[in-house]
Each structure stands twice: as C-alpha cells, then as structure tokens.
Amino acid sequence: MRKTAQLRLSLLILVACAGPETITNSNGNVQTDSTDKVQIMLLGTFHFNQFHNAGNPASNFFSEQRQQEIAEVNQALKAFAPDMIMIEREPKTQATHDSLYQLYLNGELNPEEVENGAGEVYQLAFKLAKSLGQEKLHCVDYNESTSQGLLSSGDNIEVFQNGLQHFQQTTRGATSKFMEGQTTFMEFLYFMNKPEIVQLSHQQFYNLPAYVQNGSFKSYEGLNRSTIDTTQIGAEFIALFYERNLKIYSNILNAQVKHKGKRILLIMGQTHIGVLQNIIKNNPNYEIVSTNLYLKEKEV
Image (cartoon, rainbow, N blue to C red):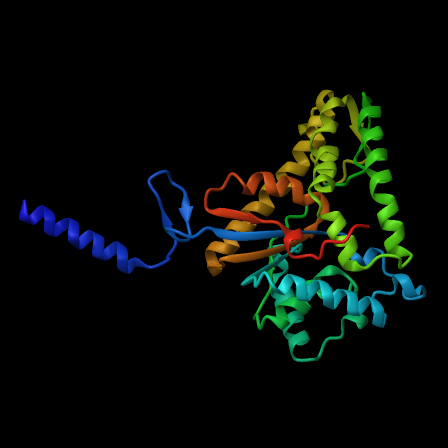
C-alpha cells in the first residue's frame, strides 16, 4: 500500500513539473497545454493589391489617408497580442518570406516598390509583426487549382448563379463605398468579418454548388480530369475547395505545434473564413476569438 502511494505521489510530481509542453491524451488529441486552449483569430480580408490604383486617391493604398487607416487596423489587431501571425502563402515559400521580412525589418525593403506591396501580407502582416517585435511570419496556405468561377454549367446551375448574384449584390455596395473613399479600411474589414457575411460566402461556395449535377468546370487546368465525376460536378467543386482548406488547417496545426504559439492571428481571404471556422471549432484544443471584438464597430 505504501509503495502504491509513493508511486502515485511520484507521478503527480512528474505531471506538475512537466509544464505546458505538447502532449497526446488518451483520445489521441494533440494538446499544446493541459489547461489552456490555443486562441486563434481569423481575419478575413480582400486582396488589397488587386484593388490598388496609384492613380486614384481613394484606391491608392499608399496615400497618407489610406496608410493612416491601415495603421488604425493594425493598432486594433495589436490589442489581441498574437504571438504568431499566419499568412496566405505556401510553406514552400517560407524562406523567401523570411528573407523579405528581414529586409523589411532592416529598412531595406519598401512595400511601395515591390510586387503586391499594397497587399495584406505587407500592409497588415509585415507591419503588425514588426510592431510586436516578432522575428517571422508563418506561411500556411495550400494553393490548388481552385477558382470561384470554376463551376460553369449543369443541372440547377441557376441555383448557384442566383446565389452568387445575391452575394455580389450584398457586398457590392460596401465595396463601392470603400473604393470611392467613403469608408475606411477598418469599416470595410469589419463588414467583411460580420458573421452573417462570412456565413453568406460560406453558403455560396460550400452549400449551393451541391445542387448542380451533370455539368462541367470552366477549366480543368491543374486537375486530373479522369478522377472528376461530372454527374456530381457541384459536389466535386465543393470537394476541391474543402480539400484545400483542410490542408491549410493542417498547416496551421503543424506550424502551431512547431512554434508553440498560444495566440494566433490568421490573415486569409474572406471566403476561407467560414469553412476554417467550422473545422477549427471541432478541435478541442482551439478557441476561436471573434475578429470583430477587436475591429471597431462601424457599419458600412
């Protein structure tokens, strides 16, 4: 009896001294800490560089006004105090982005002079990471042959197309106001990350396509056409998008385990947010933090 008690005491001491290391519990779940969950905030963005127009003051994202707005967004995000910032770039480009970020830290890289420098990677991720004193960003994207315009024909294609039209009508006004300079970066990002807008884009690309059968894709470039069942073309469309996001999710998990982050900010195109939220919320080791708790509440 005494030996058993001593053994139990020894085990308790070992557990107490183990600290917040990565462990695997009896259910096979990887846990980064025995008590605390990894907090993750998913910021859905548009790709700034696709809208940037140096010839138009409202859409010149390097203008004094727009740079001030971007600084306000970064200050709001800084309050979350992320210890890892993940970006929509593939892990195979990590070394490249490490080099670019180091040049930026050293004052040797001006985003205004590089390709896609007006984009969210430079304007949000680089600037925020520097202000937080972080040594690197983390590339977690998985880029496959997916396109929102890939589904082009089939039975009930009008269900998908009508949904797309509704989605575009819902967001077009907000986008126009932003591009005309009537709303700020903060206001537009707040709008894009509202739960109902995230849900609307999620429904458009992960639900409505299932209505479409007996059709085809606009392009099969980069795809193995022989493996695609065109009688279930809508489901195939969803599967392509879902598989990509599953692989992004896997990259998130592995980057977190490697670098032991506890507060993650993921900056990703808005159409990724709904599906990633659905996947992550089923991981008992993670807690999703609402982005709009940090972005200032302003309506577009």
